[in-house]
Image 1 (cartoon, rainbow, N blue to C red):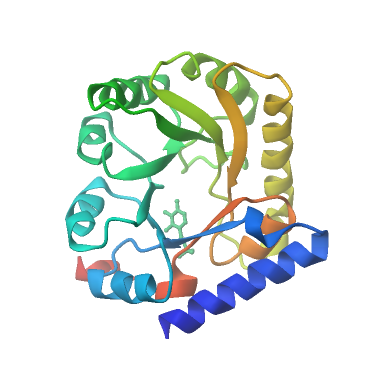
Image 2 (cartoon, protein in one colour):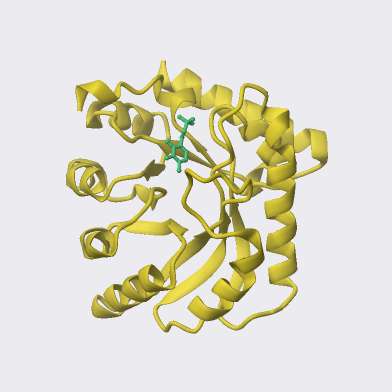
Length: 231
Ligand SMILES: *Cc1c(COP(=O)(O)O)cnc(C)c1O
């Protein structure tokens, strides 16, 4: 069941790549497993999935020791500074950095354990009041500032597009994030390598891939609907 969902997502990503002349190897599928029990993650793992996305430090802490060590955990949700220490040694990429203070804490905690943590800057491209993330206009300055920190490495941008019935509605936002990424990349800022564009979820990932996503974060499309009331 999960295996079929993963294959289906992969074929759709490949088809989207073909439509725009991209190489599917450029796109990483991240299985967003938040709220889902480890049995389901194990099923996805057995189907070949190695990239998992979670939005709560607590869930990463719980699931991490129960699953194989070659899983690459992605922190995709809003992160509080006092939770950084609990995940810094477990995640491969933090997608949701949107404040200098958070970036400073990540750098400090990474230094403490002797690593350099890759991060993405989260941008609120659609300017939604309810969402975290930087304004597009402030993103370059933000990247310049946090790139000076010794133990993080800025690897690109992330966005959560608005919820919509029609994925085409989000095309403008994906295009805008891609442009912002290229613009910042062209500034050749030290310690910045804008290689990752994390955008697209179950409802709109094909459009995101057409517009240049290198990472898509798919939850419902792999694991089914989430039931928050069980938590
Ligand atoms: C939950 C979540 C997703 C996945 O959402 P689906 O619509 O279930 O695919 C992607 N990105 C972030 C940041 C999320 O919190």
